[in-house]
Amino acid sequence: MLNNSNFFDRIRLPFRKEKELYSSLYQILGFYPRNIKIYKQALMHKSVKQRNEKGRPLNNERLEFLGDAILDAVVGDIVFRHFEGKREGFLTNTRSKLVSRNTLGKLAQEMGIPQLIKSAGPSTSHNSYMNGNAFEALVGAIYLDRGYDACMRFMEKRILKQVINIDKVAYKEVNFKSKLLEWSQKNKVKMEFKELSQSTEDNNSPVFTYQVILEGVEGCTGKGYSKKESQQLASKETLQRLRREPQFIDMIFAAKSERTKMEEEPVMVAPDLEKLQQPDDFIEVSEEPIAKTSPLTTVSESLSDEFSLDDITAVAREKTREEIIAEAEEAAFAEL
Image 1 (tube, rainbow, N blue to C red):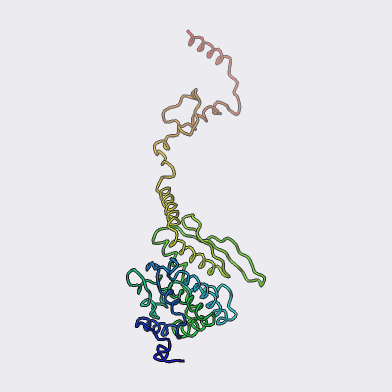
Image 2 (tube, rainbow, N blue to C red):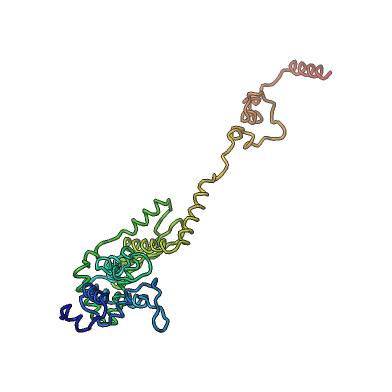
């Protein structure tokens, strides 16, 4: 490989800044660019608002799109070969961690890419979103400048061997379910998991599908080979939706407000204790008095008096002639 001085003498760089850019890119990529214009564009943020000779915007957005697709393919290839025998869910999750915006932003920071980004705004050193986009755009530039194999060597030799430990990334588990539960408890939001389906694959492996429910509002679903895995995926997607969709949060808190309002309202009016103590409310009384009773006589006693058997004796005694005449005379005098 050519040393720096011979290389620069050969291409006869006219400007000092151009020379510095070549050196910086060499430190980052491990090789010298062939077409420096592509790499300049990869490091140009849209805020610069620069245009080419045809009047079209000149920034790194198109290269970012290309680099994103190349990264997915390259990292997917590396993960597939590195973790032999692992299932699709594990491979997808590992690749997602490696190409996430947060990971790419940290990679860019570690490699010194933010110092090379050209933008019209403030310093980009702490803007992980902008830095991650620039990293993807650089991968797109590598692909156009040197091809797919160069992208593969860059990721394997420069990234996964020197900057990232792929095994640590793969097996580091973020407990999304715990994060979502923490958010729910902090905001006093009711959260539950609803099992949507349970089936088996051709190899008899169980597959579970769960959905997050927040205050009765349907959240995202997750499918996995265990209840834990499916609930984790459902929680992850729901957390992302909470961050992306303000209207989703509005629906949840509207449902919470309705629930708490209903809980605060009394279910029914408390009964009147005075009325409960009055028997007239639940005992039917005949319009005509059953019997004249003293104030201390109970209703049950007056009812029993109507059917009293006290006047009936077991053996009727015959009256004498004198007793009959005396009773008749007494009755006659009583009617006068």
